[in-house]
Length: 264
Image (cartoon, rainbow, N blue to C red; front, side):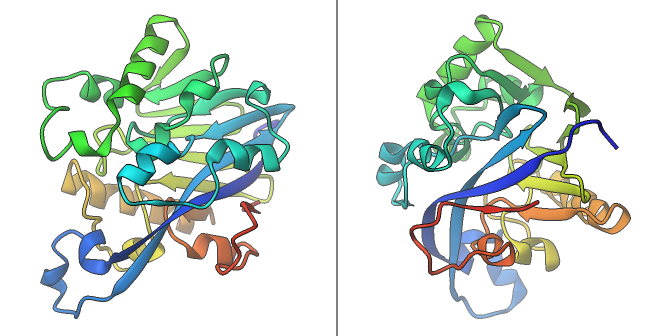
């Protein structure tokens, strides 16, 4: 048990209507009819030991509009509703560098960024501009992180690493080259913020890979890792995009005026 435990908030700021065939890799292989589906967009707030830490920062509303996503509330406005100003945030855990996780980093110029080293390597490497990868990131966000590296504001993580007292980062890959899972000590037990290692509860429960991936084998291995945390440590698993996260933790999926639920 760490000396610091955290309040964990899931902040919902956007939604997307889709089809299951849009969300799952080779959905036709399951022999099931296509159906409507939906995703929610979240980032997460950790408060404990006098610190406020963000896990990701959501998408930029302008970028989201270009991509056909619905912004319920701009992420910075959602933070303001929670009484959090950018200057209150001491660090941001950037789980990977896709656009819906990096869109507002510029609003936190004094915060330390914690980024998986494999993500930094990949998005500055020769394959980042390829057609199956580039559409998932915003070049301006990548450039901002690169500048932050040069300024000494980025802590690059490897493998499994305790990044703060009571917060462990685990690079699992799969969805993106360095996709990270964040395990938080919430007092009553661990909370696993999967980010996009697991988008949806059904994805994990039915062992069905998501459509956007970097490495299929690593994606399956990430599912196994998360399931083992839930089994062996009785951890609360929080998928990165499931609308039901709000419902399972005391909210109402029909609510549009509530920006966050407390996970623990």
